Length: 376
Image (cartoon, rainbow, N blue to C red; front, side, top):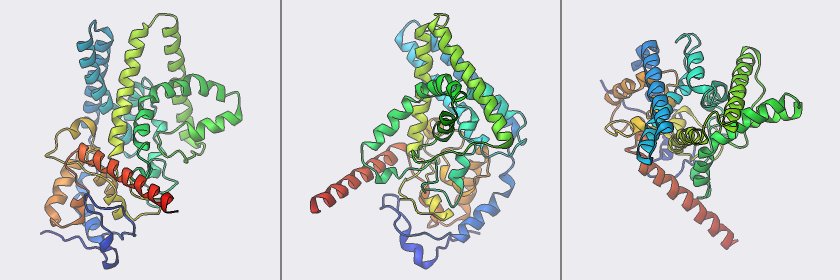
């Protein structure tokens, strides 16, 4: 039996259409949709360790083999081809950092340690950069506000913001090298610098106003171990390059692949949400509508939104579901909810229309601001 999602009458006019305007009035929670979503997915909440290990292991193995092939290649075409494979595979392996923030401790034993050894430390993106940061993005009272480290109203910002947003990601590997090889050791000598490093340079965040608090307890100890490992690795790597042990060309290839991984992730981030909230607290339903699913029959999201990220809106609705359950959860909800349900309004066909929508929205914002200045 299908269920019809019901919005309270006063909020019905605030529902954004796929190409509609920004959300300007509050949207109350759709209790029917939330109830159905919880009920039909109760048996999907357990992460399957075999899937996690097999996926991470295969992705990391393919990624590093392709990276070494790109480093060893003697001509451009094989190097570029291997580099692209390395970017895609390591991006998939790296995307498990998102799962680390949601699976319960011990649910997949040893997975956090293995991920940090395989991906986090070698690519200088240890899990502490995301743990604690991403969780705040999911907090109902923080999502889309100034306290959300992963939210910027990009659709309402000037057009030049978008290319800067992407360029910053491409340069991130250099910034991470500097953060761990230089700032981390120096911060041990200066309490003031340490406060700045922790607050501003210790999170995979896009909100420049966000300041991270100092870690506490066991998390602080885990942070210290991972930061030390990353610092030692980055200093060692730079020393090996400076002394000629690691060829400069191989090092630049490594940086190019790491840059490609960060850039691809930033493109995915660009379309993870509609970015139309101006700082007001939002209901769960409003957060869902501001987020994006790119479900089948689209095929390319397997590459640019791996490890369940193609179901980003559904993830905001049910953040406890492991990535391998999101596809089945989406199919079940599609069967249970009517065609006019709010649930279907977060599904989009592809990457390009989402980028175009964001660009058009920011351009219109520019025209609005320009018109306001002229009229003033």
